[in-house]
Image 1 (cartoon, rainbow, N blue to C red):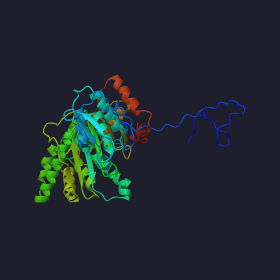
Image 2 (tube, helix red, strand yellow; image 1 turned 180 degrees about the vertical axis):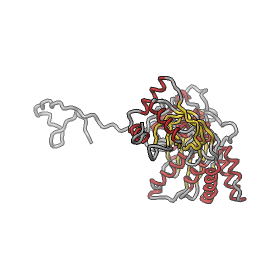
Image 3 (cartoon, rainbow, N blue to C red; image 1 turned 90 degrees about the vertical axis):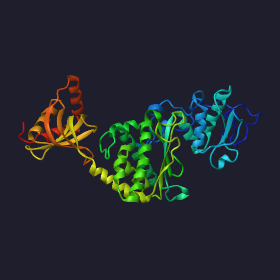
Image 4 (cartoon, one colour; image 1 turned 90 degrees about the horizontal axis):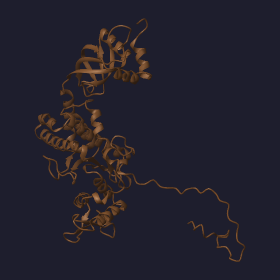
Length: 454
């Protein structure tokens, strides 16, 4: 233990003798600043569903601090969040404030205790809220962080739970936790895709926009690795939460119908509710290797219950016995989704053909006409030459064909009408700069023109 610097000691570890001559002042040395531990991550810094590593705050979480501003907290919302996360109400002054203690054994002793006012009508309301929020920030209860996260930005909560065999000290292996995160990520993506279109199989369509809509989601894992909670800000995540609510219940009903009757027609109608191959694959990943799993949704108390939804939805449960029906439905969605006629405008980013003549394959970066990022298209010799010339002068091409579901809507078949598209000078320069000076562009010239071709 360090002593204060104004109480020096001699070499024997005792205070210096007052009768001894005064010591010379010590030679100053540069002082090394003390180590400062990294503070607890803010809600926006929690591991996101897409990277799995801490990320800078995004979207509505960008201005979130360690604790919410007491002046902006509704005590009724705080009480609703405490009740949702298992805190126990233990009396208080009727009509003035209530006392809350944490869930679990620590709430029975002398642990954290919160005084929450019933409304903002009392003069000491803001003081009590400030004390309660500070106590939550210092509490060791895992649910305290979730309550603070729900207060920071009005958010719907989606909670996944898996019944898996326990590992050492009651935890589960890291690989099993990764399976849970992967399944949760898949369900969120399936919900975001369903917001943009009701299809049995989405493939690469709308995927970029769906991922962008989920950038503001934050995730918190429960101790033990069996549960995971995602917080979807009401703006813009409410549409995803509502779509997942309808899709999960529709999937549960379709599974029950198939297990009872053997018919799969319920999965056809479930597409309108948001069920898709992406959702069935995510459910398979959630349930596989467990004795059961569930998904529960809870609406933001500040935003209220969305229209057409239950105010307190029951968890939707799935079991290993549901896996055959889910796999069969996913395979059916894949084969039944028809190809789509499209007219695509895209920039040529790669060309390949086996020789200097004949047909070849072109890869396009889609600019308009389809909700995919890139497509491959096989062109005849004339169309291939047109695509090559358009690339050289920095122009996109337009082509008509059918976007095939096989391969995830990444291939265009029956291509006709290949023609360059005139664009303004600024757009042309931008396309040229995006394609020049890269290794892929060098490969383009090597593959586009064989020996002896002009």
